[in-house]
Image (cartoon, rainbow, N blue to C red):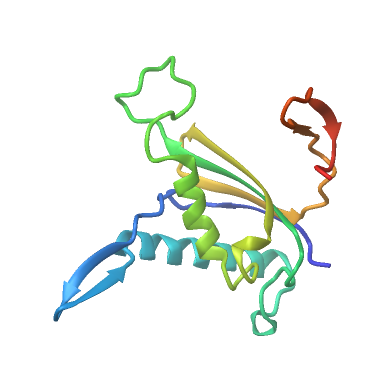
Length: 166
């Protein structure tokens, strides 16, 4: 069983850009914006360096986490506070959205940390102000026992502290 990953990547968080389309020689071609491609590569290189320094991992054997293993991903995106932001604002509640940051991170890890981001069963996203831009990352096997569910059925009362919907 692979060890959990707990690293801080010292890169500026970049939100995943939307796919663009262009007509080239009469055909529509879709492409990923260069800023997004470069940011994905930078995150992939940084995490690769961190992992190879801290855990034993042979890239030739495939992804770090095996196929079919449910994964929990926690990511905190630290962005510098703009000088225009009021001091009373504690959290960055402006664009880009936290889920767009996470999309870029998930795509950067495909085929390297896991086969597909469909293995992620629990995702926790935080967006915070800090002095230095960074991404704090925790990835581990999802044991599924730490968060209770609230189930609401039609015409039913809430059922608290259930760990399963079935």
